[in-house]
Image (cartoon, rainbow, N blue to C red; front, side):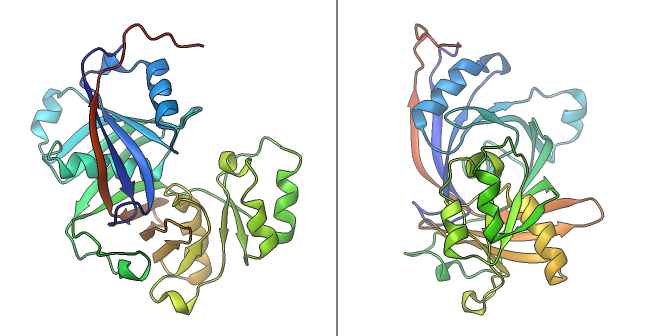
Length: 290
């Protein structure tokens, strides 16, 4: 059980404006032995937002000492109910915290996760070709972007009219489903609670009214890992490897994307902003149910 004070942050990912994008809580632990799973799950349940992230620095080895260009951390993601294997906005939020508070003194971070090693790179401001003011309210805060190196995922494409029938039986489906040509019937399917477990994304064709945006996804809030499937799909449909996506939801979100076809990797670029910073001391006497 962790007994010393733990500092946590709430970071809005895939936006440069507070209270937009997708919020994630980021907790920094000092030692690997502090990774008490019951405590971490209890903390995530207490936050009750889509993801709570736990960072633990990896002790330096001789090989690490020779490579001063990379900072390494263990990273785990918890929803209020379970630990997940991959989370895009949680990774972006964690990287932004480490860069913004100068905990990572390099421009590259390696995260050791349940999905293997994920790379986050700090990109100078101005590299993103999206005018974020098109999609968010207020004056965007100027800061760096972050590029995430994620695996590319295969998808199952289906018509919007039949998508809802996949959900009715409450089948134990896993993977990404792309429903092209959004209508009201398909939009109602988004409200089904099963969607959260199968990472559903509903996508219309490219729209000129959104300017440089290549495609729009309807998920609330913005989901980074879903683009591991959306990018290969739209890259093939549009015949291009560099894409810009907008997450059409009340909070919104913008992603600058690239498909590395040779290595089957998706590069996801976005911004983030810290909206809350607190320290707390977990109670060692807390009891956690199995």
